[in-house]
Length: 359
Image (cartoon, rainbow, N blue to C red; front, side, top):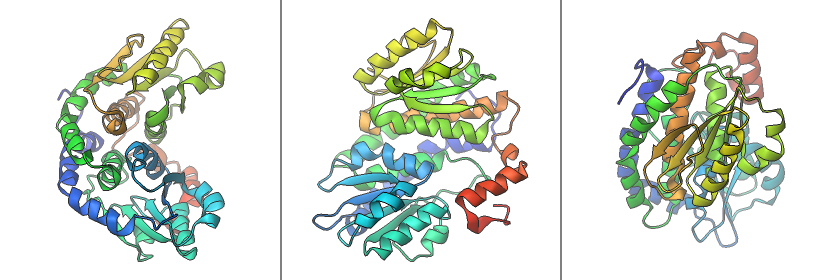
């Protein structure tokens, strides 16, 4: 693979094919965990909840997880607590997705579900922190840390894959194996394109729709974690009705397409924005081409339900290279930790138990 400096984050991104292969070998374990802990009783539903990457993963896996005989309801932790928990009961199952297990609202979601008599479980990495200490069944991705305080890359796609393997219909494992064999090629295709694009834009917008909208949200979140560039995500059509009116031609607009209908509208949108001078990047799978985007990352053919896995990789590399191009270090994210007041406030917002620990 053509690459820049081989730092910790890039190594984390590059190891995703190997990590996915290890998870695929655990498919029987994951499906067994789902049968034992995630199948609701008659009349119940499986709720998948979390914050940040956990919430994106719950939605990204919905096209597969939602195809079973029981309702699958992905929810962000806060609305789950406020709106859904009062209706949750013993027939329901609640899966909390949290790599650290220490996010306040995710822990509260598990506690609230248990208080309502529902059975809760945890998808995490390691011992599950505070959520794991609740004693609920948990399955760990078992991903070794490369360096402290890296943003979630391997852990995110591994979460999506674990959900797909655990909850997807028959045939998901074979389809995921075929996809995993091509992930290295996806990284190879993306690296030179996004590296050459990296510069100080006035902002970056990630646009998609349907099954890949959660991936656009993830892309914007990674940019926020790694750079000081303003970043947004939106539905392609809704962008035209709201965000477009204060968008700046100095921004980069990234389109994601893994569906022919979405690709058609994305291409029309990119053609329109080109007339105003916007830089555009298309991240497309075979059969869903975006010829009107100025730059393109062409990925192999994949069924739409599994497309969040390959589509995510170029977004990770884009965030990494934009961080470097704007003078920041993606391997330490020191610009976050060195902003003492903001970092402390972030813990007050999301992880009060970690206040004063430096974690």
